[in-house]
Image (cartoon, rainbow, N blue to C red; front, side, top):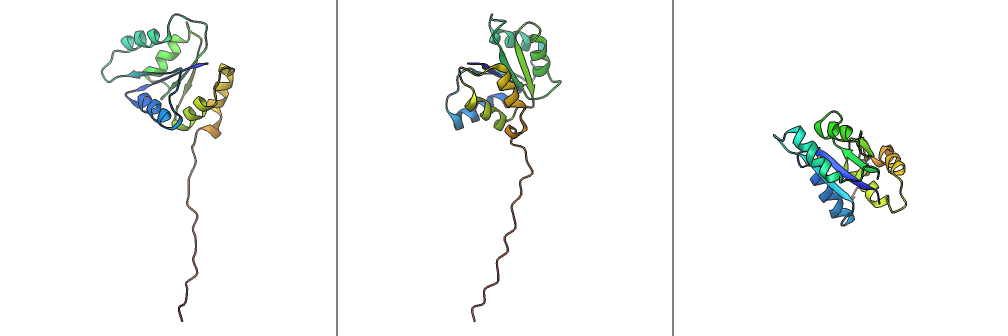
Length: 139
């Protein structure tokens, strides 16, 4: 099964993982890499690379919080040596779709396409429709 790594500033990725597991149950092959306040970016890169292991060929999907931040820059740097696909803007609906859809036969490209499908982002302008009730006369 394709491994997913959540990478973010602070505890955002930890919260995403906890919330997904509250809804969908224990999730295998889902790791987190939090960039902590005050952490040196080089130390974060070393920690992130340890999480990737020695296998540089197996595809891994990395979902990051923000393009241009340290988690993103680290994942992009490591993608030069590892088979990483990096998606920015991770959110709960996207992650839920990925973990509840992927299986042993899923390819990395299928997961990338699923993550990038706007139907799985959960973003909409939600409105409550107005309900008009007729005034009742008790006469």
